[in-house]
View 1 (tube, rainbow, N blue to C red):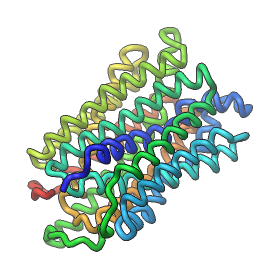
View 2 (view 1 turned 90 degrees about the vertical axis):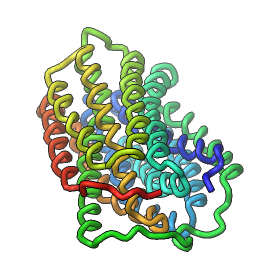
View 3 (view 1 turned 60 degrees about the vertical axis):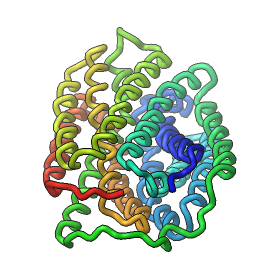
Length: 389
């Protein structure tokens, strides 16, 4: 039986919250750096690495608790934990305080992907389309981070940019507690029919899932944490108002997010490998061309590479849905995320120093190389994918 509509809506909204909250700091970092006495935003950026490290490492216990304790209960922990953590970030008085509170925020944010997505697709009739809508919601959260944070920082200050969404998140947790149906048993105890595959095939699929998750997460973290500052640097003399730049970046993310709706529907109809290869193959050209661009040309190319980066996101979750039994999806997803985001959290730590030392051009070239590496791994997937709900 499919989830009630209200529960599905809140689970999708939670995906938006998850990504939005993690990127509020990246959008407001220049303002926060100025208040804390830093001359350059790049010097403050490494203090946020704990959030992204915990986003990955926390996925293992989150996934385990989701399967063995219950996904509804863990989602309640998510809503209330994220809300309280955001309020604590708003109270931070220095770089190390903000580092600690962002790390706590990252720990609670680790709950959503291994718990919320398996909960959403566990009885979906068209899992690809469901993942597409969910991916759109998550990436709209990224757009909201650029748009809402820019406006709140300009008119009310960066602390309000954390506090107001935190209060809204707590209110959503209260609503979720009222509308989400209670689970009669934990997912690990449910009786389901497992998909049987040759051991060698399964090992290859898991290896591809892990490798592509790492490279895709590197691209995701580099772009979503760096796009705001990239646009600010390359739009000098064209547009310089932070709020206006936030609106422009939100437009980029909103357009790019629509790609997941199309990709999700295609996943239900065509082999994963062919679709995945097509999307990933277009990432490197857009990234390489963006290294030379500025102004409106940059915005067009940013939209292009973000369409391809966002469009690739549903594939890893689609592989989990297609090949992994629902009784252990949260645990498998948690382990995958721990590896991928544990490694890709280095992107957040390296972003400031790399840009300060070599510039955004070098960073964009490096991302193009990462995209080509992803293409190599995707080519290792089996030719045909068995259908699975």
